[in-house]
Image 1: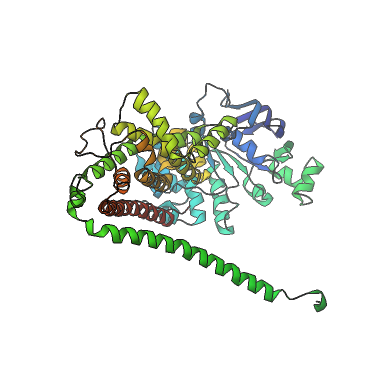
Image 2 (image 1 turned 90 degrees about the horizontal axis):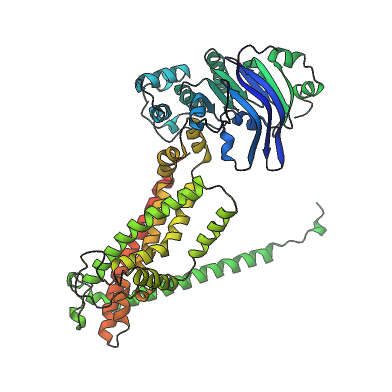
Length: 252
Length: 291
């Protein structure tokens, strides 16, 4: 697989929690304006790797990282680079939807306001919700609590909230694993639309989902990068036996 | 199923169950009865002295003229100062320990010490107050010295309650805020504190009601027992409700014991109001916030 225009480049990245090595030496590039899926069995380091990209692992005291992760040519773990700036440009959607216990509109504008957004907040609310496919559902109750929304709507609100920051990359950590099939389908549809403007990295334990939404897929096993390639190729004709065993359900 | 291998334990189990239930009811009733007898005794003894005059008169040599004006004013002053000193300190410490401090050995050490401090007898705080505030800082027997001593006493309680309330805020909410480019402070002030506020407030109220009822540390630092004026500022000498009650109760004349009972009724009413406020807040918070 040819990477033409990488948005993230990892070189010899190793992640340790105390004595436990969560990610074994790993070098790869992630293509811009594509959906890249990370698959693998539970505990293989998918989320750990994803959280390296916006330094969410900083909150884990035992976390140690070696190597470097370049974003726009600069190391994310560079001490001079304000982590707040990185998180503004690399957004994240979590497994469990986590809207703030505030109104729908407040959820959208909270992040941009903190980070000095100068434009019209009303327009931002509308455009973000439209992009997340939620506008028609909520346009008449923007000032109601976000907690009144259904699970799928809450997750789309979280995506809208991430979009409102106008990030370059959106990280998604099993964004549909807690949703029913219809809401899941809507989220997958949404990911397909968003790939035009954002680079998306999605962690999923659902292989059909990875096959449906992603352009490239990365298979991790016990912290080791086993195979990385175009999704079509990886799911139909993998190079490595272990990948084939995993995607055909022989283990995992 | 082979019946011969199974002995029916029904009878013995049921008897044990009844016995335990009986014990539990008996013990609960016993403690309630003691409480009712004590409160009843106090109310009967003190009720005739309760009046508006009792609240608005200074203490006196004559039981029927004695009142709690200065004690009431002293207690209000004390509560106000204790609130101003201990609440900001307590909440700030809790925020630091929960949100900023790395969970290492030092953190464990501090945690254990705070828990221990909450169990130290109040008289010990009185001794510290006497040595540090009264003598070393020359605050004399002032309201400020009393308030600082009382603040030391209830700080561990506030810190522990605030930490628990802060810890109960789901981690998801913090991560969501950080992922949107918020700093720790912005996350704390916009999301963690508002969500933890009812819990923190409950802890604060319970701590304040403890400070309202404490006597030993104030006696230790030498709060006065006979004050015929209302304190005008934090550097004035003072008395407080529990001290006034203690003073009356230790007099030989029986009438003064009844005056003391009237004082106890007033103190109990204040404590009851404070504790009900805490219960109400907790109830309201549990209904309002659902994650």
